[in-house]
Structures are given as C-alpha cells and as structure tokens.
Image (cartoon, rainbow, N blue to C red; front, side):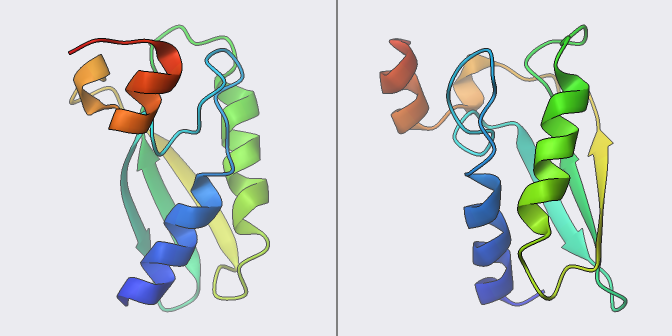
Length: 103
C-alpha cells in the first residue's frame, strides 16, 4: 500500500473516538496495522483498552463507517487482537496530555 493511502486510512481512523476515553483510537495506540488487498478489502488489526470492553461492537462499527468514505476501500474487516496487550505506553503524546497521563 502506498504511503498516501495509508495516511488517508490512518487519518480516517483518527475520526473514531473511544467513547469511554474521548480520544481517537490512533492516538490511543489501539491500531496495530492496516492492510488492503487488490480487491479493496481493508483489514484493520487493532486492540481494545481492555478485554471486556463493553463498547467493542460500537468501535468496530465506527471503524467500518469511517472507512466507507475512502474510494479505495470496498469492504473493511476489523481484527481485534490482545497480543501484544495494550498499555498506556502505546499512547501518543497528544493522548497522554488529553487524559492527564504522566510518563
């Protein structure tokens, strides 16, 4: 995938806000990888802040909706993984400031 398309995908994913934390999933460090095949199937590999996240379905739906505006993406599959486990160290500086997390 070229860098422009990856930047567009990541930019769209920044519009997906974790409803519990109020920060987008990219800056939270929840998105681990994005891949798109020749048919336009995008696979987003991501995690959640906790295994029992009650809003997992909502976040997956928001990811799929965010990708629907990109013409290169024909369909989106969201692969939720828990390895490696998420930690606050994965958050961007922006997310840490927004949530008041200190290093």
